[in-house]
Amino acid sequence: MLGTVVNVITIILGSTLGLLLKKGIPERYKETVMQGIGLAVLLIGLKMAFQANNELIVILSLVIGGLIGEGLKIDYYLDVLAQKLQGAVGAKEGDFVKAFVTTSLVYCVGAMAIMGPIESGLTGNHKILFAKSTLDGISAVVFASTLGVGVIFSALPVFIYQGGITILAVALKDILSQPVIDYMTATGGLLIVAIGLNILGIKELKVANLLPAVFVSIAFTLIALNFFSTYV
Figure (cartoon, rainbow, N blue to C red):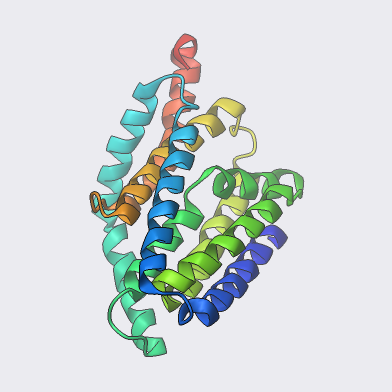
């Protein structure tokens, strides 16, 4: 869990620095910066998504994962958690919920957020998570300076999500082959694209409800490997 703990600390430190800088950045600069971040997030997501050789696995994962997410109301409960945290800290209405939800998803959905905890759990090597910590800390400065205090609380779901994957990796070490990891990454990449669309205000998508798709892809990849290995 060392890598995840370091990741959480860098998000908190980066967010704190961003909040200190917030008042000194004019609104028009913040808007331009957020547009740049949105485009960068789209690029990252697309590069990840292209790791899939068989798009059908990704499509089925998104459909089934989306149904599971809707049933569990993940997006709704993430908003509820954000609102409770907002009330607890006495933050003003506005960007708190958006900041919390957006950055929680950005930090939890991605190749490093999957591969890092898996590597930590299987080998005890935290190199990927240390690199992710650096990137997250820097982006937290930008996010907090533009979106506000909600960013700092994204450290909580990061700890739960990445810590959970680390524990899961230990339990599932025999089935986490490279193809499985590739399709988890590709599916997560499309969710990153959706986050980019949300940041840019192009279309508001319930990305949280699609999160189960990343883990559903494990099942579909294993089925394909066992019965349709030519198409993986």
